[in-house]
Image 1 (cartoon, helix red, strand yellow):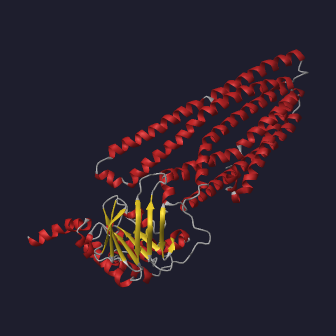
Image 2 (image 1 turned 60 degrees about the vertical axis):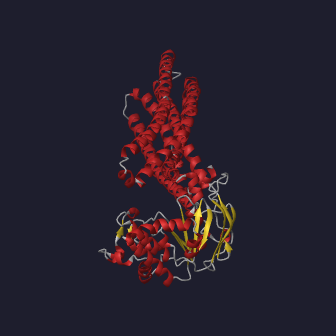
Image 3 (image 1 turned 30 degrees about the vertical axis):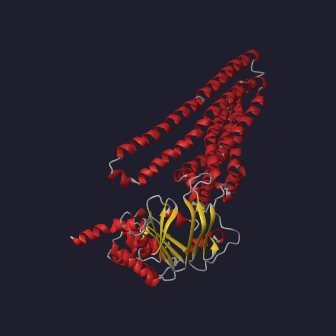
Length: 581
């Protein structure tokens, strides 16, 4: 894991190396200053100003060098840590882009957002402390101990005796706090999931007046995080009193023993200046230990974040392009060969069972079925958003697992149930289908999707800004723009997953008529709830509980007098009654 994270330093190696080097310079100056101060104090009884000027100038130079080194270390440390976080966040984002639907289901989108934001920030802070404080504190500790022993080795033993007590206390705090931080991260995911779900569905929340319920749910998740954080902070807060107790105990002992030694030896074994510098070194030793404790606490918190990020970075997606995958899709023919699919490989429940379908290139296929009949699951296997559990799916006569993923998905355009538009102009959104599309191609696609007319009614036409999520266009307009976007890909296979549910039947008919006229060679698969959307299809498939129950043309299925006929009668009865009246 450490090796992987070190690779993320990338182009910020220079800053990462310079930061601890400047810290060494700062520590060296700070350890020399007390010795010069001791000389200054011991020479002040001479009655002349010359020692004060000489040692004062030396102290000013040392302090200036220390300031320069400290400022440089802070500057390069900030650059190195933010650069490291940028690279880490970038690689995490790139990795998530390669995830399949199943991978995202495994981690959950809220957890991935937490890892990309909060977890990276924790690691960034820990990294900055490691290249600054984790270098400064041990060096300051070592240098100060050496200097203290150089002055008077017996007096320095006071500080050495305190160190094991402090180390044992810090280790105990670390071991108590670490499991709590691990638990907190999981609750953070739950909290973020609650926020994400609420914001995404805010219109539904307000429509059903469920604000109080959502507030209660959020408060519950937030309260659990608060309790764990409070408990962890109570444990960590013991660090301060422990440090202060050790520091003041050692200072009292050094002051008492030092004063007795000066008086008893007549300042021959220990001078006043040396006692002063010894006290300063003692403070530096204990301050270094306090810094180390802070580093340990930060690392404790960041360790779990690092584990979570490492899990994502090293995760091998279940869907990858094969080596030397096929990059050309010959045509839009589709074959389902005894396909069975489970969302969870360990689950006994099959989302799809024994599906056999032979779709010729250029055909129009209608798929209908009740909620939960796995209509969407079926079409997600065509462009390999999921892999089949058993059997095989062929597109253009080739198993989809043999294609390069980008090549396959560029030739299988899907307009999903949940249509998504991004913040930007209408033209920018449409160019998601083909970034090199000309204005003429964009207009042609919009006319085919029955979107051109309402776009031109906007003041800025195709340069009209779409708000985030497409909230400033209606559901039907959003669906038509998404269909136009898919058409710009000029795919071999076009899949509409209930993508005309928000448009009126006349517009729906015009869209299907346009498909027949302008893209006859493209295989068109239409999932719909309305019989009118599929009755002109070359084949109609009726799904129920993940199985094909009926299969044929509109006339054949009406004559069969099964599920399709029931749906047809339920949708046309009202119209017939109205006509008879």
